[in-house]
Structures are given as C-alpha cells and as structure tokens.
Amino acid sequence: MSKTTGSEDIARGIALRIAAAGAFSIMAAVLKLASLDGVTAPEMLFYRAFFGLPVVLIWVLTQPGGLAGLATRRPMAHLGRSALGVASILCVFQTLTLLPLAEATTISFTAPIFATILSFLVLKEAVGPRRWAAVAVGFIGVLIVTRPLSLVSGAGSTPLPLAGVGFGLAAALLTAAVTITLRQLRDTEHVAAIVFWFFVCSSIVGALLLPFVGRMHALTTFALLAGSGVAGGVAQLLMTASLQKAPVAVVAPFDYLQILGAVAFGAWLMKTTPTADTLAGAALIAASGLYTAWRERVRRRQALLQTTAPPV
Image 1: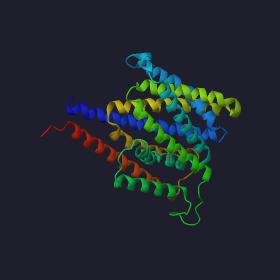
Image 2: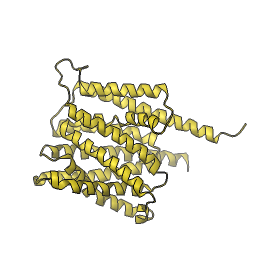
Image 3: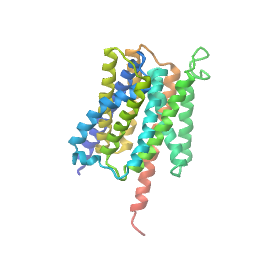
Image 4: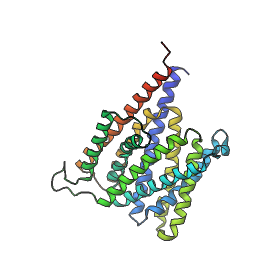
C-alpha cells in the first residue's frame, strides 16, 4: 500500500469515526427526550436493540462470508460479554434519565480510566506513573463535574444527584470491563458475530423486562425510540468501519466529540446549558483519556519494535 493510499484510508477512518460520534450523540439525545415522557432504561434497552438489529443484520449480509461470519466457537464468551454489555447499557440509560445530557455523557467517558485500572488488576499489565497520573487527573475531573464542593462555579452551584453519578460511574466501569473481554474475543471471533449476538442478547433481555416496566407512550415517543435504535445501529457500524481504515489509537480520540454533541443537543432540544464545572471537568476527563490512548499507542509501538528487532 502506498503512502497516499494509507493517508487516504486514515482520513476515511477519521471521517467515519466523526460520523459515528455524531450518530451516538443523536441516539443519546433522542433517548433523553424519550425519558422526559417516562421511558425507562429497560425500555430504552429493548427498543434500541430491536430497531438496531435490522441495521446490523443488513451490514452482516454485505460483509464477505455473509451469515457465516456469525458462527462462533465461544458462545459462553459471547454470553459473558453480552451480560457485561447489557448491564453497562442499562446503567448508561439510567444515567440519562437522572442527569442532564452533557453531564451524563461526560461521566461516561471515564471508561478509559477504569480500563487502565482493570488492565492492571485483571490483565496484570504494567502501568507506569504517567498513566496513573492520568487516572488521577480523570478522577479530579469527575469531582469537578459532580460538583460536591462547587470547585469552579462557587458555593451556589448545585451538586449532581448522587444516584445519577453512581449509575454513570458504574456504566463506565462496566464499559471498561467490556473492553477487556473484547480484547480476548477479537482474537478468535469475527467482529460481525460480536456485534450481532450482543444486539440479540440486548433484545432478549429487554423483551423479558418489558412486561414489568413497559407502558404505552405517545406515538412521537415511540418514534424517538425507533430512531434511537437506527442511530445506535448505524453508529456501531460506522465505528467498526473506522477501525477497518485506521488504527484505534488514531480514531478513538474523536469519540470525545460526543461531549460536544451532548452540549449542543442539550442546549438545542432540552434548553440546558452546561455549567463551568461541567466544562472544566470534561476538559480534564478528555485530557486524561487522550493521554492514556497516546501512551497505549507508544507502549504498543515499543513492544512491536522489541519483538521485531534483529538479533545483534
């Protein structure tokens, strides 16, 4: 592959990742609007998966091998990954019902912080002092966003609801755990199988919960729920396609555009303006995540050089 082609692929990968961030932002915004009509987190789980599944299936059929890519040799590994993923998404959606859109989105981006901690505890990976410093900076950002001491805006600033913050941090921790399991699944499983079976499991769990928490809503609300599924499915496919064009370390930083999307949609649709605390904390959380991604890229490059260096 020529340098020009490589550059074009990376540019396409970045463009796809930006589009994915936009689609995820739309999904979160419409679900937040739906929550204002009393839609619960389990309902969001079901409708997001149910309406997203056809999008994913169409994508699977367009891939080389088609439905054959859905075959798996590790069904129990998919079940474990899906259990973590479903729990994570339920916490994400519960956070959306309890917190403003910008704050809920910002807290969700603490997942890289927890991923660093879990990689140290579970995978026994070496974590240097600079990455631990990034973890500390990220948690300082969380404290500022949650405003327990009104660190930026002053004593008049209202702290975020504790339950919402708790669900947001739980979602980030579970998302980090999903990241750890995906590292292992991707060694043997096709990405189509990982995405498809997760959507199937989400639909099943949501359907089981629906009789207990579901209720009738306005047609506009059901339209929002259907739109969230399509947007979520498209976002998942765009994110996957971006990884086929460019390395994860190159495209992952563009995920933080979702914070800007949440701020914009919150101001436009919900008429909510983020406080100075939220903006300052978001900057620290983003800086922590970006630095962690950069250090991970450097670490992997050094490991590759060590394994491919000629003997002397």
